[in-house]
Image 1 (cartoon, rainbow, N blue to C red):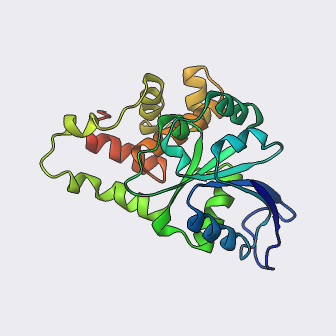
Image 2: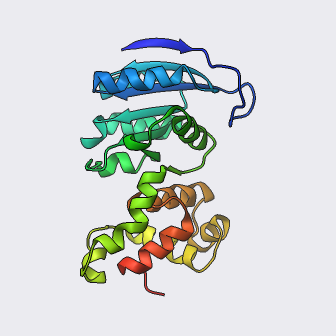
Length: 229
């Protein structure tokens, strides 16, 4: 693992002026890791980056805001690291390939998904800015794949489509209330949970349904038979 301070070029930043992100990049593939490191140097975001090939190094990451990971997310997230991410409120942005089967433990922590096919300096910047600002991010390729998925499934029945996506009872509750037009605050009040908990659950729902926003998630859920109004 090594540390590196990345100096941004002067330009318009999507983050508040003066923001300096503390980031750990965990990418096992050397070529891909160097590619992302190079993009860091062209971003109009102030950041201090640490680079690693081993997910275990996350346990040494203190006082940071964002972890960008690829490859390691195919295996379960070690419980001690998962607990540290929760305790320190560290967000996770996952770089994914279309064929990747991301482990659920990583999905539960991820605040954004960026397809390697979409990876360019500007898309990386937007993804990092969204996640750092508390917005859930899904890259365009993943979003388009979500929209086209029903057609690609051909003659599959809604029940068969629904069986391919697993939502917990709480996620079903939140999804239904969202479909009824309730805001995060209203959902929190209806279920007796915190608004932060609702935001987190919504993020997980968007990730599972591979959707960039709440409206598309409801449509996708109804098309697949997961949600019947």
